[in-house]
Image 1 (tube, one colour):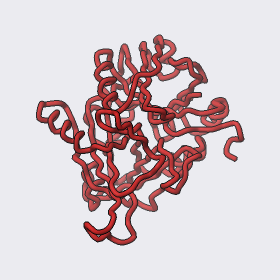
Image 2: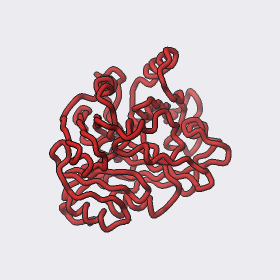
Image 3: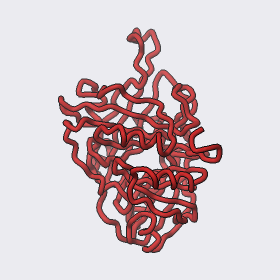
Length: 342
């Protein structure tokens, strides 16, 4: 068994969102509309933040919970001295991209709010709800007479938030997203997060070989391209650009969609010929906006040993984080910054 009986890793635990103090209350109010609530708070002095996150700045963090979920949480990280403005309104087709996906039962209500915000001059990058088939039917359904499983997904990027919001039609997955129907936007926790890279098998396999995640899906080739309307719109694909996908879940999940558990890491990989811009320095701690992913583990010392012996870089010592939890950080071989928590 991977790493012995006494280790475990869950789904992606948190997205860290860098913010200034004046942003904090607005971010909390925003995510409350999606069903989140304020939980733990913690602080770091400059020296402690530098040791764990590489940022010499005072830090105040607020963890947001969603119903009873043990993954897909949000950590608002209020920096006294942020290092940059983050990804801002940068689109999805960039190395260094981070985003969080969540399910809703009311996507067109959200669309109404987005369109009104744009009309009022809010800074927003937006792709309207696109039809997509996550599970391709073996034969095309007879319209109006047969069931047609599909989703609608939108891309909603604001200066501090990067969201893919989707709604299912014609099918359900029992353990992949739990909607808070009492919330304003009838939304689930974050069901999966994503990163973008140039294709490199060694970088991809780090997440399975070192962290012990379960690979539940991997494209055989660059299967999504310009002819795919949803992919073309959300990733602004040019005719020569294509990408593939690798999905990693926590080990208790399954390759069977009906048994799969949310908390997924979705890796979007492009060919080197796609010539993607690289902005990893704008999506690491200290940056404003989406700048950190975390996993919660058991037996953090063993994970620390394995990460330290891998090709990860800047591996910190194990130390208490701002919530007084054992933790360490590292930069994965693909250049993305991660923190593990026990």
